[in-house]
Length: 248
Image (cartoon, rainbow, N blue to C red):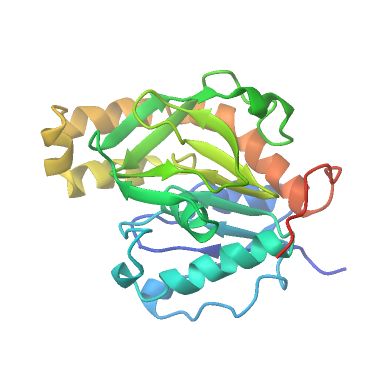
């Protein structure tokens, strides 16, 4: 029997799969990690995998010139939706999913959103197979300056925050999370140390911000590891196919 595998695209050595490299295999999905920033070629299709995961990075989803592989990544995300392959986009990955499907991403008008924060579920999340068991106001890790300012026309809005409203959404069986759920402590500390000016501009102390975020990682895991496990169930067809399949 073949092992089910997820294709994972990373955009930077600073934003690896993190805890997903533990959570997804434990739930039945082994990972094929592709590093285009390191010269790895992107696959031509997504249907060879049970799921697609697109991680974060420093690039701009609205500027294909910010990395030579962004256009192809959007094509893979679009193909995943059309081919009904479950997909999960995190931070930049969510922004790329939005742009690929007709949404819009811009530089965030309210500045950087960083650190451990709360988001709030929208009404539609209570009926969603991944989000329905997420707490009303779960803890997440934020670290982004760009924001999704318009969702794709067919998107279901799943979560919001006071600063940037489009925090989570779904199109078919593809999910976008503007926030992070996967960083390990050393990654969070690296983000704070590598981008202190942006944090200082927001009136925050980078080291203190990082340590408060690290202190919340157990809570983040408690909230979001079950969702990742449900995503694996979706990819392995252990969840009823109640979600609509989009036509090309």
